[in-house]
Length: 140
Figure (cartoon, rainbow, N blue to C red):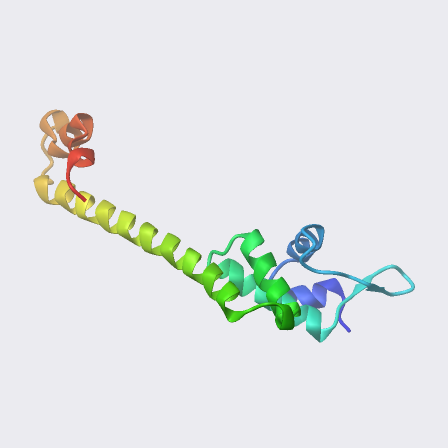
């Protein structure tokens, strides 16, 4: 059994993070010492790592909660339920990547259009392009 600080160190989170997940009803703390300290098991550690990895992948708390419920009661769920959650996140990430690639191309054009010399910025091509908003009109 682990106290909250020990569990936090093992899962590389803070005790406040554990308390937050408890408030979100994603973790329990059923066992306490006589002094009132929360005690956690290896199962709690595994659950916390599950949540942490889900957060690293950018899943919402609701999606992680759904995945946890599938994990806890696999006989009443299908792999398709898990896959659907992952596919949804994958589509979100792919859209973010496309947007970042568009930003990268736009920034590259801005960078390439500027001479970068030490002359006055009165005629700076970057500032002029931003003012015109010309990059927002370009095709993605």
